Length: 174
Image (cartoon, rainbow, N blue to C red; front, side, top):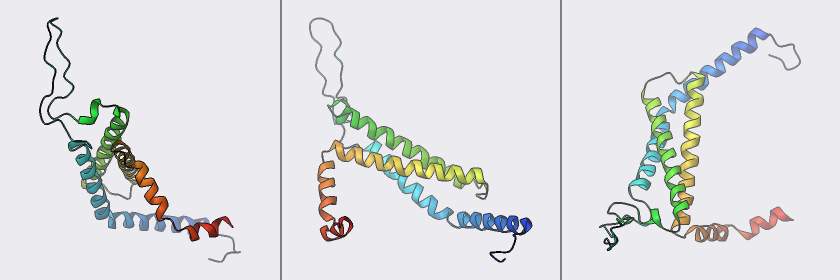
């Protein structure tokens, strides 16, 4: 088809159909890669929930009752996260929520891929992309929340900035 020639609408639509068919084939071929990525993300998210930063209480550390018959509230029960009731509760909850969303998105992605539905369907493809983006963004957010929880976020930023070559940056600002 020439650039200056008038395009035949029939040829354009045939080209587009062939293009979409090739894209569907590409997604069918990368199904295994999507499964591996989703499995790794699900494993990382699961591990954050099971073994949170700071660990979990190993035994009950509850105050005993007093004479006024008031039942004490036990916040340090065995198996609960140490950071759950600390001053960093907001960071902890952010990490837990983002990790839970990441786990849910990656497990949904795995179930959708394993179900055997044809991945050429545009809606299925859109759902796969949305789930993968949500899983990657949320596991990244969980990483940064965890870094902030253990106090290494500032150290991480300093190391990344220190690794940047000053000569490379000088070339951009001249």
